[in-house]
Length: 377
Ligand code: PLP
Image (cartoon, rainbow, N blue to C red):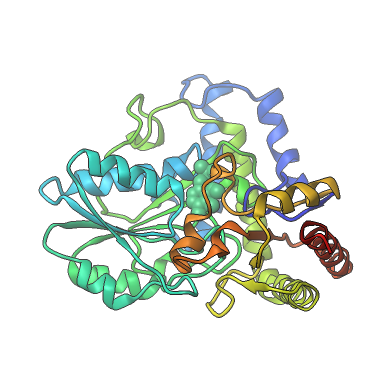
C-alpha cells in the first residue's frame, strides 16, 4: 500500500503508542480522584500540556485538551460569540473545513449573520474584502491557517493584526498547519487556535484548543471541574499523553517539512504534470504547506480515478475525508474555480515525512495508467 492521505489522518507514531500503553493498561485511574492511583495522573496531563504549548509557542495554561479538531473549532466559535452576545455577525471563508462551515450554517438558523469570504483561483482570500466585511456587529473572524484540500496558507499574521485593530476576536483552525509550519503564538495576534492529534501521529479522539490568556472562554462541554473548569468530562489520560508525545515529535520534525517534504512534493507534482495531459495544480501559485498537492485532471472524475488507484494499492482522496461519503464536488475547488469542472476532478495527495523519492515515479505511472484507462486510450 502507498498511503497518500496524511491530511485525512496519520498513523500513530511508534513513540506515541509506547508512551500511551501504560495509561491504557496499568495506570487506568481517574485523574480527578484524590487517592494517589488517580491523582498522580494530573502531573502526566500537565507534562503533555507543556509539550503541546511548546509546539505552539504558547503557555501551558493557554492549552485546553479537547476530543478533536472539530470540538476545538466549535468551542472557540461558541466562546467568542458568547463573549459578545450583542454582536451577531461573524466572518469566515468559503474554503473552510466543514467543522467551521456547518457550525456557521447552524448559527445562521439561530439569527446570526455570516460573511463567507471568497477566494481567488489560487485559493487566497482578499484582505480588502475581509477589511470591508468587519462591522460593528462583528464578534469573530474564523479563518484557517492551512487548507486541508489544497494546503494553501492564509496570511494569519495580517488577519490577526487587522482583527486586533478592529477589536474583533480571531480564531484560527490550524489542524493542518500544526507540525508542518513553525507556529509561535507568543508573537502572533491569534485569540483561539485549534489543533488535532490524528494529523500529527497521535490517535484519533484527542485535540487541543489554544485560548490566549485573558481571552473570554465559556465551556462548550459543561460538567465537572476538569481542565480548570473549562471542559467537563473525565480526562482521556492515555490520549492526552499521546498528543503530548506527538507534539514533541512534531516540534522536532517541523524543519523536515521545508527541507525534505517540500522537494518530494514538488518532484511528484512535476512528474504528474509531465506525465498526464490536462493536469493542473489547484493552489499551485499560492504559498502552501509542503506535504499537499491537489490536481484536477481534465475530463476525469475523482471517484472512478480514486477507485482504480485504490485497486492498485494507492490511498488518495478527492478532498476532505469528512465529506468523502457525499457525491458533492469539492466546495474548496468550486470556490477557487467557479463554473469550472475542476471541482469534480480533484485528486488530493498528502504525504508524510517518511515519503520516499522512489515512490514518485511509481505513483505517477499508476495515475497515468488509470487516467488512460478512464480515457479509453
Ligand atoms: N479542520 C481541518 C482543517 C481539518 O482538516 C480537520 C480534519 O480533517 C478538522 C478541522 C477536524 O478535525 P477532527 O477530525 O479531529 O475533528
